Length: 226
Image (cartoon, rainbow, N blue to C red; front, side, top):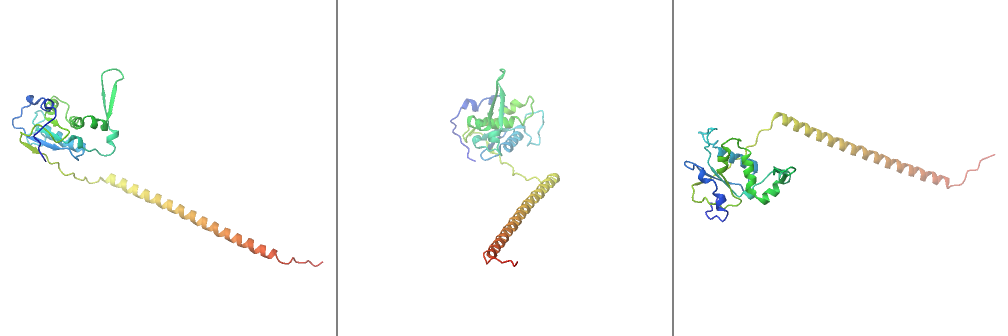
């Protein structure tokens, strides 16, 4: 991962609240959000910012490391969350409930998307604000912490969970039902085809009988003897 030292963004906002953090003994972990799924990335950041990846983790003490998230504008979401996920907030005035889709929020400020996802995974206690100060998110790859001992964070491989027996049985039932419906549809098509074929044969026989009758009627009329 390329660590960029030049920073052209808002330095005041990027360094806000650093004086209130005790940086002694903390590691500077760098997360690259490019191509990462939002929920999986946020869960890893929440684990590191709480210090849960350390054997000395204690719930009543803030031992989390500094987390720097880069390329927030390139984070990914699954399904239709880009248009269906909605953020709500209230201004305090009557009837002023506001909402914004994830797509609009990504266009306006992509850093807030990751921040909200991480903060909503943290416990709501007095340590929440301190952990929020340790989270630094940037839309691109530029950041002002190039002089720090940065450590790139490697995302763990995604493990495929074994399918539960109930879910497996439901899938088998769904497959059998789909096969049965397909067989019924094929049977109906076959019956309709046989009926049409039989009707066509009957029509041909009727035409042949009609033609044979016309040939006999065109001959000499029979004279009845008195």
